[in-house]
Image (cartoon, rainbow, N blue to C red):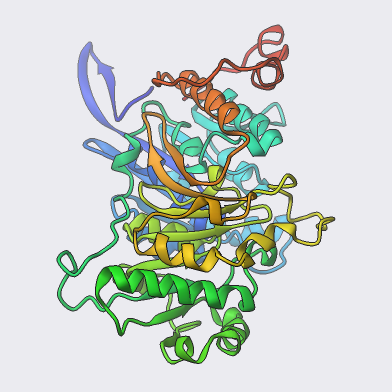
Length: 449
């Protein structure tokens, strides 16, 4: 049964009952934030929403999704056998089973996810499910897996991929507030502003080294404070205790003028404290990280630097107005699991002579000179349409724009969204990617979205 209310007939009299959903999201920090559109689509009058997430993120989940019942599951941290992991989660699994969900949304293709989802009848499980001992995908996530083989043309943000596991998700613009660059007239009293600098993510190749990051931070701080009117605003270094060595390297690489305005906050905040702190910043300079997604969720403007395997059209900040500097050499996006054969060519655009000047301009809300930027660097600004997240190219040339637009229009139609688009039709190669013979030759699985 779909929707937020189901009707059960007892003696021919309709009785309205609450509809209960369970979302299984056992991945990490950023993935939890990126589940927002699905979670909010399932919430509403008459709805009961449960969320199974990693125990270390339960506090943050409660902040992000106060309407949901949170079930902490031990999914990460420690080397345990599958049997030990299941034993450690026995009580959590029993509490989840007791929720008796009418629909289960299994978002991760992992063993623990399948173990949890297999407690329920496969007919109520959406996304990834088990049938006769086989791990299978519904048609919509199968499309997502196919598109991942053509990442340069990636047309679907992960937030939207998960949101469309459900029927009729809420409008993209209703998920997060858009990014608003503060000015002295709009700033709330007591808001000191400043620049948050996220030092690194889980994958080091996606992050800028300190000697590259420090001058970019100086330029971003200059631009952000010129707009906000906060001349004495600081740059705050953000990260866990693991990033403390990076903070020291950043300070060594910083100019004396910047170093005087830097405050090291690494390891000083839990996730709830981080959320509160991000709300007061003018701008967050970051690689592709969970902190980036949290800032976007709060409406704090993001300026992200994407390189290596980070690809904005897949995992860029969700919402309107956020900025992404996307390094896009011919080899991008790569796989972080493989060694780079090109000596990190994707890092070079961030050291180009006039790049810093344009960082300051972008942070201040001024026009960027595309002719001053390397050919392999794009400046993107977040926007949205009826299906989900898109990006406008403010500077640079995107060689995959036409193919991506065609795929975006096509997958929107698969989910019942008709977009006004002047994109060309799918070429033969992309048609073969989207539609396979087994889609109609083999008995089809029911798409339960």
